[in-house]
Image (cartoon, rainbow, N blue to C red; front, side, top):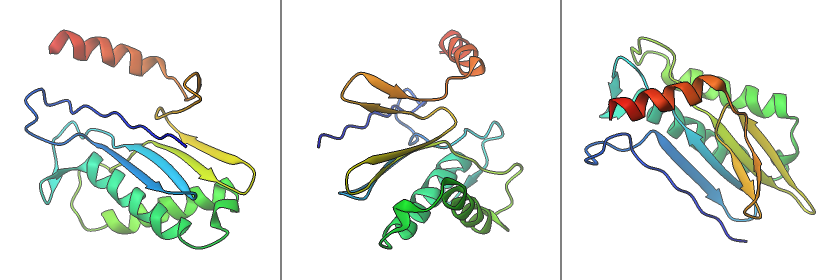
Length: 149
């Protein structure tokens, strides 16, 4: 199996890390998480709220999928577990809004790979098939960012 991740920070001089987090547990799970950028710039321990959310969900995935059989849980149970864990972690942190993240999750099972994709992070298989939810607003904001930078 070949696994690649590419992430570029919005900071062109590398002054701050991106809001992207990856997770790989060989034979169990691969995940890409892209924390939502906080327009107010709120930070916890020097991390953006988006990175904080992405790291929290990656850690929750590690705990959840380290237990045998949990890759077979129904999607609503997996998402419920991850949402509750994130909610518990952000409680009392003083965020202006709720930190959030996208999630592209590949769960390796005996004969199959199960994909769960939330928002616009994606998974590409065999270099050509992409599983991703595209949104028009992302295309619009991408053009706006290009104009700004």
